[in-house]
Amino acid sequence: MNLDKIEEIYKYSDNRYSDLFDYFLNYCGYEILSTRLTIGFETMRIRDYKTLSEIKSKEDVKYPPSSTNYTRIGKPNQIWFYISDNLKASLAEMLPIWYSKINPGENINVVLSTWQIRQPIKVMIIPDLNNINIICKNLDLEAYHKNKDFWEYICKKFTSTTLDSKNIYEFTSAFANSLMERANIDGKNVDGIFYPSIQYPSQSNIALIPSTVDLEKIVLMNLFRAVFFKSRILNFKGTPNYDQLSDFKQGFYEPDKDKIEWPN
Image 1 (tube, helix red, strand yellow):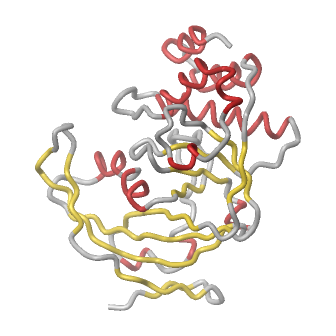
Image 2 (cartoon, rainbow, N blue to C red; image 1 turned 60 degrees about the vertical axis):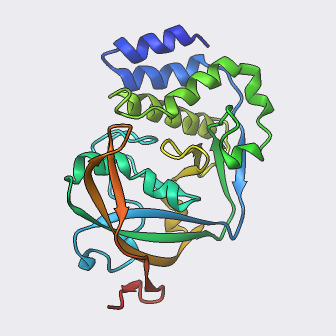
């Protein structure tokens, strides 16, 4: 693979996503490792809301509707179920959204949902070769060192934000979708992609295809709500501070009725 060619496409192509996808799929030969998520392993996700009436069933906390925008893993009109293995990482991943969505001085109502793996789920690995990520430290990533320059380049892109490069999601989603397409061509059944948290790199994010939820390979377990505050005071990085105003209060999910209830 030619890193200069990839960077040229990224910087100058008028069809950035399509050209990157094609190059990754057809002109980059590299080994992709995968791992299985342990049955019983618990993950979590965060969403914000205006009123509790928005959170009435599993539909309201599972994967969101398709978006017309690029995301870290997804292209426009593509749905992914994003989860994390850590509360701080889940909250940190919301910061880029809240940066533009929430005004300084406003409260943010959030719901935390926890999800448990109930059937085998196989995910491909975007590695952390800096040995920061807790999960990657316990995985055998030796195969990635054969193309270390390439993977270090990819990892750097995956740890970049839209503040670093406004088109970065076109790059990462092109690479992620090329991985899924290659797995499909090779007849490998994979459910998603594992990658270190961009905002909290010692912890992890997982993007799963919607059928993992629909087929109940992963199931909703618990729900909690809390209130945060976006400060008008900036931190040393020049980004807003966020303060937790309330403890997490538990809600209750009735699977048979697909109903969520929130005690006062």
